[in-house]
Length: 252
Length: 282
Image (tube, rainbow over the protein chains, first blue to last red):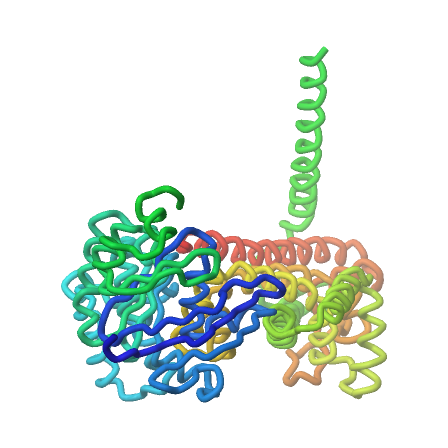
C-alpha cells in the first residue's frame, strides 16, 4: 500500500472493563478517502476518535498498542494533545457550529493556535470557506449567526472550521447522517476535492456512501477489524464471509 | 362518580390559582393606594427632611442600587467560578457532593443569620465598619447559592457537541470553557444572577447590622460609607420617629418604589430569558 499516513499496531481500547477495540492493525493511506464501516457498536467511531485522541475526554479509557502518525506515536511521542489535534481535524455527526457568527466559527481554530494578524486571518477564512464551496452563499452574511444557515451549509461551515488550521488529516464521523440527499451529495463531492490536500477518514454505516466516496474501505465488527483494502475489491470480492454477509444485507 | 372527582379536582386548582392571583393583586393595590399619594418626582429625587416627615427617598434609592451593584461584583465571579469548578474540574465525587450540600445549606440559612455573620466578620474582624462594602459582601454570600445553582444549570445545558468541536480543533480545556461554554451559558447565568439580585435588593436583615444607616444627608462617597436603603427605610419609618401621621405614607411610598424596582429587575431577567430562548437553535 502507498504511503501510510496514520497507522495502528495491535491497538486495544477499553472503556472501563468493556473492550471496544480488539487488536486493530490498520494503515490509512495518504491523500485518499478511507471509509470505516460496520454495524452500530462495532467500534468504528471509537477508532476514529483514537486518531485525534478525543477518547481521552472519556473517563476510564485505556489503550494499549501503537498509533503512528508519520512514524510518531501519538500517545507516546506527541506529548501535547493540542498540537496533535491541530494536525488531525474532525467533523461530527451532529452538525455543531458554535453559536457564534459564520466568521467567528472559522477564526476559532486560528485564534486558538495563536493567529494574530487580522489580514492573514481574513484571508485564511475566505480560503477555507471557498474550499468548502460556501463562499458565494455566505460572503454577504459572514457576521450572521451560523445557525441562520441550512443544515447542509452548517456542516460545510464545520468543515471550513476544521480545514482553516490546515490539518493533515480530517476525520468525518458520519457527517451526512443528519442531512438531506442534496446536501449529502455536496459533502461527498467536497471530500473528493479535499483528498488532494488532506488524508480523509470517514466513518459511515451507509454502504452506498462508502462505495461512492472512498478509495479504501475497512469493515469492522464487534471491535475487530475484519477486512481492509481497496474499496473496489472489498465491495466486489470480499475475502471474509462476514464482510460479504454485511454487504449483502444479511445483518446490519 | 369519576366526573364528580374531576369537577372537584378542577375546582381545587381554580381556587388555588384564584387565591394566588388575588393575594398578589391585593398586595399591589393595597400598597399602591396607600403609597401613591406621596409619589412624585421630588419624592424620588430629594433627601428626607424635617426628621423624616417630609422630602424624598433619593439616598435610599441610590443606596439600594449601590448594594445591588456591590452584590453582583462580589457574587457573580465567585458563583460562576465555583460552578465551573464543580462541573468541569472537580474530580472527587465525594467532595462535589459535600460542596453541593454546603451550598444548599447556605441557601437555607435565615437572612438575619447572614446579618450577624456579616457583622462579626466584615464589620468587626476585617474592620470594614458598617459600610457598602460589608453589606455587599454579606448580601453577596447570601446570593451565592442562587448564582451557583443557576450557573451550574446553564453550564450543564451547553451541548457536549460544542465542547467536542472545540477540543477537536485543539483548544485546551480553559480555552473551551472561556470561549465556548461560558458565552453559550451566559444568558442563563445572567438571568439567575438578576433574580438573585432582585431578592437581595429587598432584604433588610442581612444589611441591618452591616450597611445601613437611619438617615444620611449626603450620598456615600466610598465603599466604606454607610448607606440608606429602601427596605430599611420602610422599617425605620414604621418603628422610629415621633410623627407616624407623616411617616407612614412615606413608608408606603417607599414600598411602592421598592416593589417597582424589584419587579423591574425581575422583568429584565425575564426579558433576557425570552430573548435567549428565541435565539437558541440547538
